[in-house]
Length: 97
Image 1 (cartoon, rainbow, N blue to C red):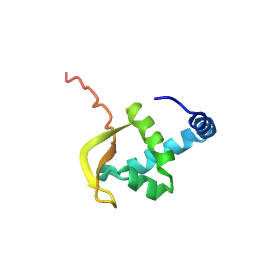
Image 2: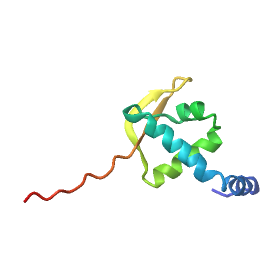
Image 3: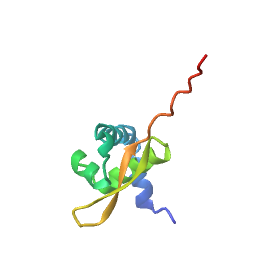
């Protein structure tokens, strides 16, 4: 896929705010606990456009901070949407003596 001038400009402009926006998305998903959140729920709660939220959620997914829960929820349009959850921490290995 070819990157357009407008895409490069958008990326350049969002770069300074991206860490803060990513943290907001992560915190919202974390605060939802086992209920998780769909992209639309995140966008609605945080007042983010899909063009802002989806790349931040994808960064969290690629960084293995969040994961697909394996569940779906319906959007307002009635479509199935992935429910995202915080990836559980690795269990601590304990040695019994």
